[in-house]
Image (cartoon, rainbow, N blue to C red):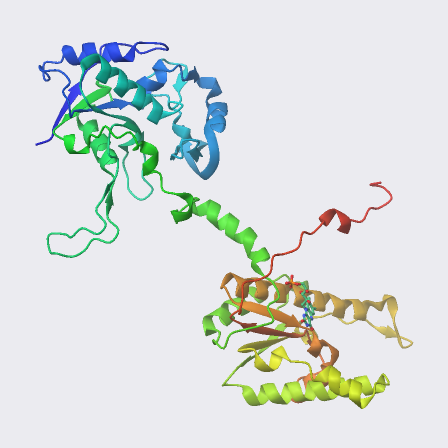
Length: 462
Ligand SMILES: Cc1cc2nc3c(=O)[nH]c(=O)nc-3n(C[C@H](O)[C@H](O)[C@H](O)COP(=O)(O)O)c2cc1C
């Protein structure tokens, strides 16, 4: 049987108090524990009194600075309302490895105008208290130091073990069998947290009962001091929820741009239709002039659109040969140039993007055969730029789905051929071709980019 006994302590703790003596006296005057502390008992102490004794109290006005000081990493920020004003709470990782609101800096159960930090090293504090009590009483006990934490997926707070000594904090049941004879594969019980939470039942928050004794849980008391509450901290590499949802979204949005790299080797796997649909949607969400949607896309999928793909690529190659011949290249040189592996023939999916100037490009009068101020040309360039924006959106979306893409220029050089094969009006301008597939290998490291070297300076900004 496990028994929980709350130990009222009629004392206002402050820096330098003799905690061992105060706790011993409190236990001695506790009617519910006439035989005092015994070997095998577990003493549970709230971190608040440990922190006060260790002098971890600061002025309330320094609270935010104290939180910043105790923070190793901001995990999430929660904005809520207090007295009609927005207040934000930082949920942070402390140097103890704990993840908790406001770094555990707390204004409850302390003098008005002050806040209490967590103990510097709660495991060390637990060890010191255990050794001191064991020495003075000639017994073997376990000590747990607790703090009250919220839980990510459940309402209500409960106590957790943030410091422990002389306690087996985890019970690894992996490899044992349950009552049905099934093997347990990943069950590791957080015993110290269970004991901490249970002790709270007899340490009601407003009762001046900062200490409890748990009797009958001696199976977890160990004089092997290898265990500490730090063992309860999940290693970072196993953490599936390392940042808050809002923070993860922001990080993901930033990283999406960098996830895109040109991928030129694909596996044979097809690209799911929804990946392409999402990519087209992303493309069509790009900025465009005159509130138009000037983009058009031909999507060719291997096994479904092979004949149009072949016809297009053959026609593009023929045009290229003609252009190279016109440049004065020899047949041998031309054969060599066009025989290079063509990713557009083998990629699982290829998207041919176009801009259609008929979607809303303005036209300007040609006076005496002259495009005054090159405005028609500029208008076409403007729509091409919008085409580039759409394609970048598309490539980022593809990368966000863990697929690879390569933007290949070839169709840009043969607009007439593209229009002829696809029977398109001459308002259509091809913007290259996007090969899409599952990358054979992870993307190469992106080289460092010196953005400063890309800046230009006008006369006025020196
Ligand atoms: C308009 C345009 C045309 C491109 N044409 C080709 C091409 O014909 N062949 C090719 O292998 N890569 C092509 N690329 C891809 C670039 O080579 C590639 O973006 C560049 O090397 C930077 O690498 P990254 O995309 O991985 O950042 C093209 C890129 C753009 C923006």
